[in-house]
Amino acid sequence: MAAYLGVNQLDLITSINDGLALLETYSPGPECQTRIDALRAVDPATGQSTLGAIATATDDVSLAAAVSQSGVNWVFARMGNVLRFHAAHDTDGIGSSVHQKLTAWNATGGAMTMEYNRVDEECDTWLAINRAAKLPAAPDTKAKLENYAAAVSQQPEAVKNAVKTMVKMIAGTAAGADEDSLKKSFLSLSLHERHIINRVLPAITEETVPRPVQASPFGRYGVPVEGLATREITTKDESVQELRAKISAALEPFRATNEVQMSGIGGIYDDRTRSEVGIMFVCTARAAASASKLGVF
Image 1 (cartoon, rainbow, N blue to C red):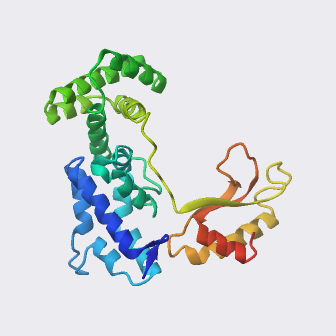
Image 2: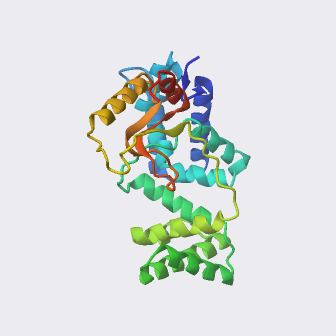
Image 3: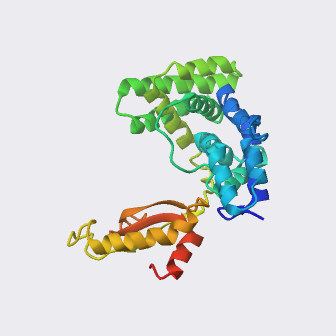
């Protein structure tokens, strides 16, 4: 059976369906639903949907291509904070498991464009309302909000507006206020004020909640190059370029299965207390082990 980043095809499909079902059950809004519906839409030219192509892939390479072309990573990554909310609070007793199975194949990871779009807006609004519902409408809550908000932003007026809205939303959710009125309160704020809310509320509501498990299939690997850190040699040195080319060639067979995220020259460890510089690459353990067996490092 084909597999994707170590997850067999059937488990991959199950995790996708479970993730989409959770997002639909607690839908952030119509724009998010439109993006999900697009994954299931049948293309008249091929007679199948992009999710259908994942189900019918026959080997690792075609499966990787189907996942890449489906747009499912975009949906899960863009709605990743909503999924992390479900994981943190274990929504319906499945939120944590669903999130864990998605992160096993990096569904919520990857590079994202920097624009703030309607999906982002819907997710931020949904999160603000649902996190507000987790807090009691009590006097000490406001003081806590003010302390956290002051640590997030240097703009007093923005902090004031954000705290005022959070207090209103907390009281509103406790009193069963109409969801549209809660949305309007949040959307009336500037992007910076919304940012404050979406930094403060999770910090408070999830401060005693275990962090969601994010077992990425990727690891950071590297080959130190003596002299780079001290600038005795430069990145243009022939020996550096030769080593980089060897590593790139060793990893090449794994690019077709999406097992290599990036490679370059720089710090080779995530640990910032270590200063070794060399050829760095982010890939699966399988790809790194293969490169190692070839004697590249």
